[in-house]
Length: 436
Ligand SMILES: [Zn+2]
Image (cartoon, rainbow, N blue to C red; front, side):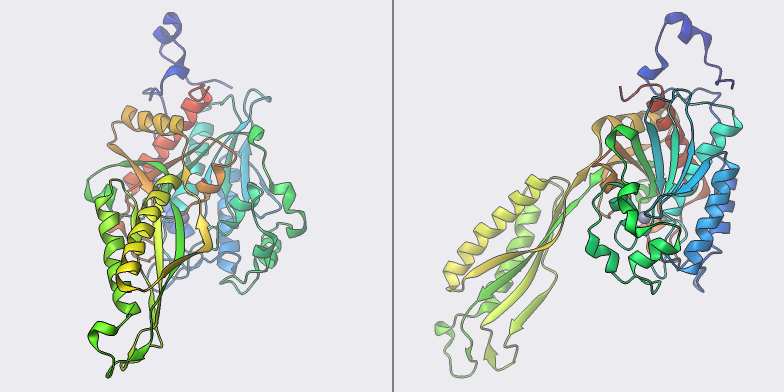
């Protein structure tokens, strides 16, 4: 198998090509037309009247879409299998059988009433890379695996299974397809009774890279080509309860009230003030409120509110939370209304990407002349699970207007091709030893 010709002076100087990502003129560029055409073909499976797709996991549309991408993987020269969690994995061997695989991919399932790009760009972009390598006759040292994760939108099912973290109770959850996750996994060729076999060991994977649309407007509005993802933010939720004294709203003088609602109002303002004044990129929100007994003629005796805090770092979430608790203490004392916090078990840990991977992706973008920026992901992705077993990186491409989970979702063909080219250069760099 001929490898791509490298400039002779590199060899003469004894420079390891692995020291830097070099977008050599000979590297095949991703074809934006082919990507656009495949996006259009894939969008026929589960097409909705608004022009997007409702290709929910395990539905007939999802199964048909999976068959379509399986065909594309075979065309790209990949050996395709479905693991016991229903993940589709296309593999090409490397020249050194002892080396772990470089894995890349995303998901083709959608939310109900979704668009044509969320997840699809990452799967089709990964297949594009495999196709380019095959057409150019480039043999990597490492095996390359292209993955389509099962049921991403229903709770990262495939990547949780691959990292050995799918809770047994999750199998009983009913999905939009009308099947439980257990039945759905069976319907797409997996085996829910043997999920352990889908687990990959860290020693099997050299790296994981996910190409994805941004789903926000930062890249589009700032005229940037590529987002280098720093990580997926962690999320913590609390129920915040203010206890006052319910009493007659007509006969209780204004100076003799312990009004839980007033404390709650001060609390909501304090959360916003703290989140705005503490340095950092955290966000904090009071998004829900309920007063009891909840009548116009009764002073509220109890108010229950939500508090959500997100950040890329667990310690920063904790710092914001501590400041909020301290402020709540002052409000409680001043108004004689105790305020208590109960954390809800919906927390998702922050999942930072690998620092080396960020550098490799940034260099790949630079070598291609693409404008890039470091940025967090405020949305969840399969990559957050993969950080548990492999050095992980994420590449964002612009979403027009930041619209996502909507039929109006759009990413330009050139932006998809840019993403695939950065993915290709990232894989080539890792193959040449950029992570070693
Ligand atoms: Zn997605």
